[in-house]
Image (cartoon, rainbow, N blue to C red; front, side, top):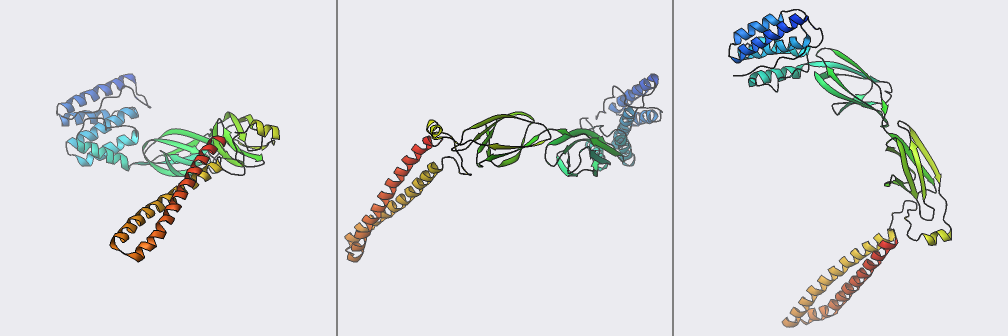
Length: 358
């Protein structure tokens, strides 16, 4: 036998007198008991009697109307079931039936009724120039925004175009009502641009590589950060910088060139000059080793196949083919051996440079 929803422990707005409130709750319990015993007509009469009482809270009235809809659905009174559920949802858009053990037909009717009900939203912010709104994680447009939403609870997020300001708020949409929401954006990130003289310095913030100067704007959290700059031939630069949330900061830094003494003292300094990648020659020699090795392998396979053909031509007495291959096979083998030796030398060189070019 299907069961009905539990009676709410407390009322919402429009609180009735305590005696009337208790009377409504007691009558609701009696209707639930009758429903559980299969006395659906008796349960319906009790619910109708409760619903006619004045000054009921919206929460209790919504629950009564919802259970009237369930009872009508069980009695196959479909014309009365849907309006009762709709009235319940209009009073309390957060009322739920999905967790209750009711007939699937009643549950489906409730869910379809809730899905059809819509409310309106008007969304504004204190900093709404080019601020974008998201509702339940979906982009819906720039502020000021007006639209319709399914009834119930929704999560609203507003973020400025530069991603520095943000606001989040939860709201409840009622059926056929306009909900005007004004949010106050708060700073959540800062923007930092960095340029160096000369350009091309590697930029690290809090020991994380960000790129090469000129750089930015990059988004970072407000507060204190450790800035490090490195450029081949120049002294390393370190500085603690403080960035304020919602602000755009620009740093112009002149790097000091190293003297000959400094260059000798720091042979393994990290470098990056005018956008050149670190360990440039390491990767050049490594790539050359791979390319030469591939050529050597190809010529080696070609020489091996030619030698087999050379022996076959000798066995068959094919003099022309024999003479042709006698000259070609050694040449192929020489190219294969030379390429493999050169590939090995490049591989060793790249390995040495890998440790020298840090």
